[in-house]
Length: 270
Ligand SMILES: NC(=O)c1ccc[n+]([C@@H]2O[C@H](COP(=O)([O-])OP(=O)(O)OC[C@H]3O[C@@H](n4cnc5c(N)ncnc54)[C@H](O)[C@@H]3O)[C@@H](O)[C@H]2O)c1
Image (cartoon, rainbow, N blue to C red):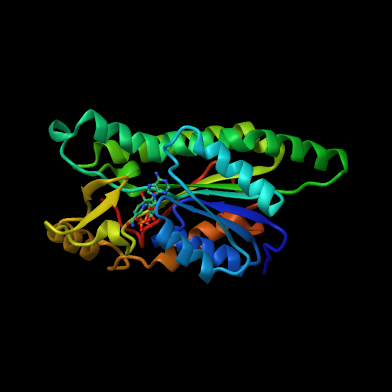
């Protein structure tokens, strides 16, 4: 139905989980994909598995890095047509136990990093769209920002995460308005529970390492059981299913859809 041949995509957080599946599906559809992740090991493995991809390891919360990542994508792969702001993690606690560092970290990765990536891409997007218009061509570009039902429904224990993920919806709708004139579709996909390390059953051992911090991740087994049982499809989603919703927004199938939030949760709400 469509091919992404000759398109260049940038996917953040592509070393594992949903981002890796998104990169795989974009690659399978023909796009040249720049993969980014904080963790060089998983990133190198992902790159090996995706033909024609390139990689750029680095921390998106380093203020200088988003510009470097965008510049490198354009220099190495020859353009930038699709941006998927996917990288993220949870760092949960009830409000009164949430530190300033913890709250700020959730804003830094979920809203400040996507903002900096889009700002870095703006000159290329504007200049390319103007050139195409002068040539009488219209080429759609795509931005997909990843959000969560924690943002749209709220989730106890996730003040920072849900705030960052809600902010990305504001950025999505604003950029849809600013970049419509450049034929950029800017949309968001909000996930429910998708089977990655972030939703493993919460135990003393369920931790991830983010920049040297050991962060407890996971969802309480009771909550997992209750929300899954109450949801229409009665299960968590796979990373491939999650990537499918993102692929729609990266493809010509969504050329007349912009500023929207698609919830991909099997009907689950918190
Ligand atoms: N899994 C779910 O149920 C779920 C639900 C809603 C939203 N999400 C969102 O989906 C996205 C992907 O999550 P996932 O479940 O695949 O998690 P994951 O941990 O499997 O993958 C996320 C990747 O992002 C990378 N990352 C984190 N911080 C980074 C940084 N500063 N710079 C570069 N890379 C960084 C991690 O190293 C990791 O490889 C996240 O934005 C997450 O918040 C996930």
